[in-house]
Image (cartoon, rainbow, N blue to C red):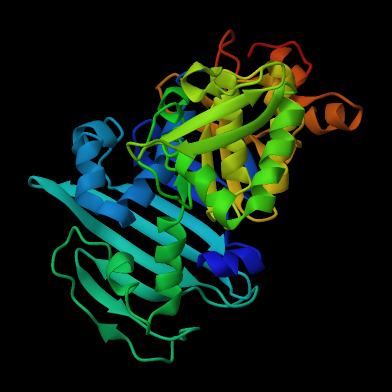
Amino acid sequence: MDKESSRQGKPARIEYLRVENFRALREVEFKKLTPLTVLLGPNGSGKSTVFDVFAFLKECFEGGLRRAWDKRGRAKEIKTRGANGPVSIEIKYKEPGYPLITYHLAVDERGSGPIVFEEWLCWRRGMHGKPFRFLDYHEGRGHAISGEKPDEQDERVEIPLKAPDLLAVNALGQFAEHPRVAALRDFISGWYVSYLSADAARGQPEAGPAERLNPRGDNLANVIQFLREQYPDQLERVYGTLRRRVPRIERVQAEQMPDGRLLLQIKDAPFGDPVLARFASDGTLKMLAYLVLLYDPAPPPFIGIEEPENYLHPRVLPELTEECREATERTQLLVTTHSPFFINGLRPDEVRVLWRDEHGFTHGRSAAELQGVREFVSEGAKLGELWLEGQFGVGDPLVNQGAPVRVGTGGDR
């Protein structure tokens, strides 16, 4: 989905994720993903690994499978210990006006490098329609069906790839005759997986507007310059929200220095002169970066944010939750957190609780599926408080991480 269409309508939504043999994710399935999905659990429960699944897919489409595979240490570090099958990732997503589309990618290693063991795209028309693969590849060989809405009656065209480590969607998505393949390619390539750093945001980049914050946030000044030049009203929304969250802040400005670099400055109310960003608090810079990302005039179709609570005051986190929910009108968010304050404002179906079993493998379950949680919330309880009280039965680092127990029974957890 291009930027203009993302401004005009709803983005594509991921509704389902299944992962097999990716590190601790031996077999994990997430059904009925919500526009705002939050992963909750103790350290080492697998939150960052799920997060990295999305980063891995994006990097496969941007720089190629080999680069993404090697970056993570190849099969020795990527594949689940003792796993015999390939690493498998499957997503189901919905584009407005089209049937639910399933994308399946299975990767294994042969010799010194990875191969695309299996890759296919399919959809089902209607409730009782037969699933139909309009792209189907195995180790670089396969076929694709062209057209805006390819049908099984259409011609299957055999298009061999140059190498078995190439993604068919990446290759065929460059051609106009495969618009649905191209839409998936653009969709995944457009994901934003954040590794924001306050230190990175303090940098002094070369002047020049940038449309989107990069994963580390070291072009924050460039994005502010872009918003000031192209979307001043949107930038004022960012400043207005920032002032509500950090009341002493008046404005933020990005000024070009004589040597061509951009200098980010923050004006604090009691002082006449602005403060250089390198002297601003980590929390102020992180909040500014999050707001710039969430208020993007043409946001990415999918945004991943890892542990937004770092450096932020606990009282600000419920408000950040609301900012994230408001942003889901135009994008989809995946957030990992340890913070009860962040999840206090969430619904049970928006929270996935992760834990690892006695063998070290990750499991996940919607908080809405944990017995008693919906009833507690309907009576006014908040999810973060229930989690701290141990009412989830899982996801608590101080208790045994077995199967979920009945909420409120007091039994072993």
